[in-house]
Amino acid sequence: MKTLIVYIHLIAACISIGILLNQDLALAKSLGKPLSKTAIQELSKSADVMFVALVALWISGLTLVVMGYLDAPQQYLLNEKLWAKYTVVSILTLNGLLLHFFSFARITSPSGLLTFSAHEQILVVITGAISSVSWLFACYLGIARNWNHNVSYEFVMTVYGAFLFIAFLVAGSVLYNLHRKDSCEFPQNFYS
Image (cartoon, rainbow, N blue to C red):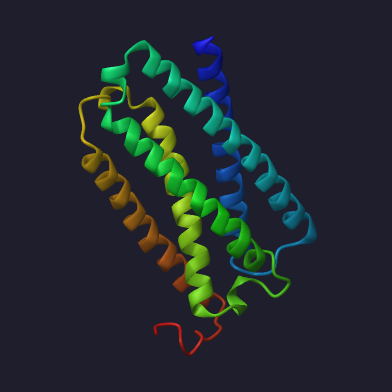
């Protein structure tokens, strides 16, 4: 039974990562300009599939935790990597809500992302960076067996924070270059 649940967990993660990377690439190619109707429909379908995959990941993940706890109650819950993974997945889930209710509307706007205020543009690229890093890092934690009972919660979260910081720098650089490439002026309040 445990093997089947691990398999479901793995398949849901693979589907999510595949969609994430595919959509990130499609959005990068759009260069902040308005998306086609087809691209918006695909983005919407992808969001629906990722929602189902995320629910499957939560259910299968919590089931695996319960099974692990029942096998070794004292030892299993002392694995700090496990708690870090659930922290990352919680951040990923909350960020997903922000993506759905804030960023999605700006990305799919008929006028394109670059027409929004600087603060909105920055929030969109930050939510995108958090999403990419969180999904990839959560999957890494799923396979990082050698970190079980060997690393602290603080260590794992520091590594995660470092990846987020790098992603924020890259996202900011991409946004800056989009404005330069588009040869449109920055909004007057871009740096404020």
